[in-house]
Image (tube, rainbow, N blue to C red):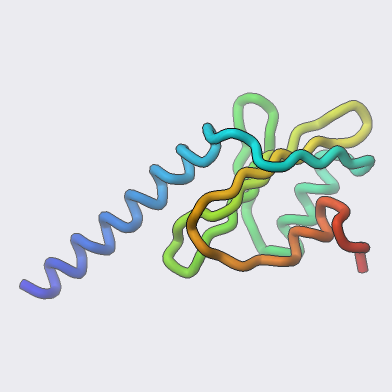
Length: 112
């Protein structure tokens, strides 16, 4: 019986993580960065520095999703092409999580 509760609890947690990703992408934007680097350069930065697989969206955005230790998203980055550069829209949630390498990708820290 206790194993069944664990499996059900894990399934509920995974389902809530998926639902909250979709919900986060519909939330209001918390920060916007306008970068001289192209969308593909910024996306590659997220993929390399944070070991993320980005999601391609129908609107042309590439989305990086940061998750906490429980798999719940706490920060999303929607990367759009903008002229010769890119625009990055950041959305935060109330879920706790820590990931600092993204700051280099949006120009808040120098690239190394």
